[in-house]
Structure formats: C-alpha cells, structure tokens
Image 1 (cartoon, rainbow, N blue to C red):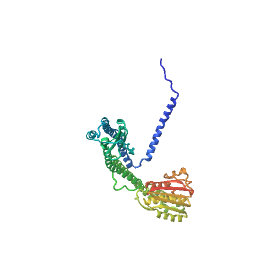
Image 2: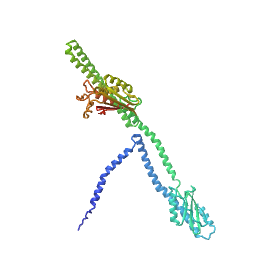
Image 3: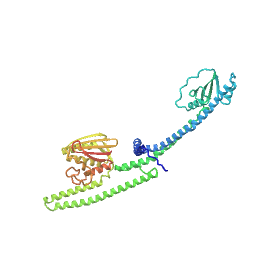
Image 4: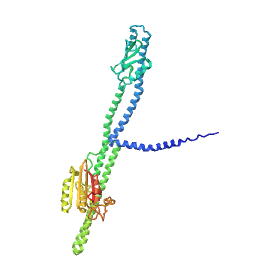
Length: 470
C-alpha cells in the first residue's frame, strides 16, 4: 500500500523566506556594483592598471597561501619531527644508561650522527617561558612535536640566536640541553620564493605601465582632437591616428567625419552667400525703382518692407554661417564690459557687472561678442536694470545675466531657442522679426562646447546662464 509524506506546516514559511532571499539578490548585486563604481577610478589609464595589477595580486596571494599552507608548513613540520625524534632518541639513551657518569658516548653520537650539541645540566627549574614571536610557525610546530613525542616539561628558545635553537627537557635528576641549527628544523629558504615572486611582479609592472601609457595616449589625443572640433578650434597639428588598429580606425573615421562636416558647412555657406548676393541685387533694384517712381507717401511703406527683408536676409545668413570660419583667439571680457557700460548709458539703463578670475578668454572673439551682445541687448531692450556676474576659472566661464523685465514663461523657455520662433506676448532677441536671436546665441555657445539656459531671475525678470569652456 503506497503512502505519501505529509507536508510539514513550516515548509511554506521556509520556501517563502528562500524566495524572498532570492528576490533580494539582484538588488543587492546592483547595490554592490554601484558602490564599486562609485569608488573606482574614472580614467582609463587607472582602470587599465587595476585590470593588470588586480589579477596579479590575486594570483600571487593564492600562490603564497597555498605555498605557505602546503609546502612551507609541511616541510617545517617534517623537519621539526625529525629533529624532535633525534632529541627523543637522546632522551631514551640517557634514561637507558643512567650509570654513565659523563655520557661521553651519548654526546659523541648526538654530535657525529645527529648534528646535535647536547649538555646534561644539574637539576634546576626550567627558565620561564619567553615572549613568543608574532608570527613563528616554527615555535608552534616544534612545541607541538616535543609535547607529542617526548611528553616531558620543556623550554625552547627560537627567538635568540637566529641560527641556533635551544631546547631544554626536564629529565629525572637532570636537564637535557640541546642546540640545533635552525635549518634542521625549519624551511628557512622560503623567503627566496617570495622574493622571486615579488621581484618578477615588479619587473612585469615596469614593463606593463609604460606599455599601457603608450596604448592609452592615442585615445587621449583623439579625445582632445574631438573636443577641439566641438569647440570650433582647429585640429592639433601633430594629430595623426596612432596606437592599436581599433584606435587607428577610430582616428581615421574622426578625420573623415570632420572633413565631411567642414565641407558641408563650406558648401552651405557658399550657397547661402550666393543666394544672399542675388537677393541683395533684387532688393537694390526694388529700391531704385521705388526712388524713381511714385510719391514719398506711396513708397515709404514699401521701402520699410524692403529694409525688413534685407535685415531678415542678413539674419538668415548669419545663422547659417554660425561664425564657424573664425579662428580662436583672446577676448578681453573686462574691456567688453566697459563697452556694455557705455551702451547702457546711451540707452539709459542701469547696469552692474562683476568679474571674478582672469578677464582674458580663449574663444572666437567676434562670435563670442555677438553671443553676449544678443543676450545683453535683449535685456537692455525689455528691462531697466541689468546685472551681469562672470566667473572664469579652471578652464570654464560662467556668465549670469539677470534683469527686471517681463521674463519668459517656463513652458516657453526652450521654444525660444528654436529658429524662427517668436513670442508675441513675451520677449524675443531679434527685433527685426526673424526669431533667430536666441538660436544664434545658443549655436555660438554650443560651437564653443557650452550652452545657454534660461531661468527666473531674482530681480523678477529673466536670467540667462551662459557656460562655455574658455
């Protein structure tokens, strides 16, 4: 008759606990790797060194542990066993022939056959135990073997003379003192293995570190070239693809990409320049015809429309060109702030400027001046009070422009950066109606590797934050 085992009441709780523990493992693993990544070096060179050094240290630690545990300890134990066995034999001889007054034969046999120097001392208390060394495998193994083989009161000194071990054994009416060479009871050549292991590791590191540096240098050079291109600066003169095949391929791909982008920009600029020239000719012809025909009242409105069209055309061309052809140079921010002060006086605006750090910047001067002119000019147009705070340090420039104007609603602050977008009820950088002012400003900032952000100003109006590498 078949029987079934009933499920224990506690099984469900155990299964539930195991299930919860298994579910928490992925989260714990993620937290562990998040903690590791937090303290891991961020640079490729340091991480590469860790990849090389960590396995080497782990391997050597395992080898050293196995060697110490299996080889060193085993050899030391067997040598100590043999040494204690010889001392035990001497003890047996002394106790077997108690009538031998001077024990000359025993001393001779111990010295010639066992390489032990022994003395029989008069009965006296053994010396007090000395301080044990912090790490001495010999002291532990030798004491254990004497206790196991001789089983008499004893005293050993493994700390004194580095080449000699002294052993005293309490016998009946006498004390046996034996001097043993340390090499007879201890594997003293173990340090040679450790020295070779550490020495070869240092040699490997001396070879690996320069090799890693040479392999990583082309990657850093490529990163610098890409960063210079992103900031609108010319490519370093000594840049050429180097290093491993993958790094070379990435370098050649970057050069080709840069050439294609520059060629596309040149073609676009050339096309727009031609279109602009043609349209300017037509607009000039319109102006001439209006000047020759009709009364002033009839032609004034048409002339204003032509001027607006010409202004729009200049804005389109400037936006498409993006000042990309200009080379980087020095820009004096302090002198530019003085010009802004004169402009504020002419416009009857209140302006305060603060500059922290070096006033000289490494940017494209005309483009950067236009960026600041667009943003500050917008503040002059719609506000009465403008505050400019600039901080230059550690290769970065932060300019904060606050005003007390009407501002821009938060939901529309990103829209105003789009080309041809105007805000009827708020502000716009381009008074001519093209809607390109903020687009041109952000394009110039991003071509320098930075950006422009808009926020609410403590003065009640708009805050423009310009951050670029400089």
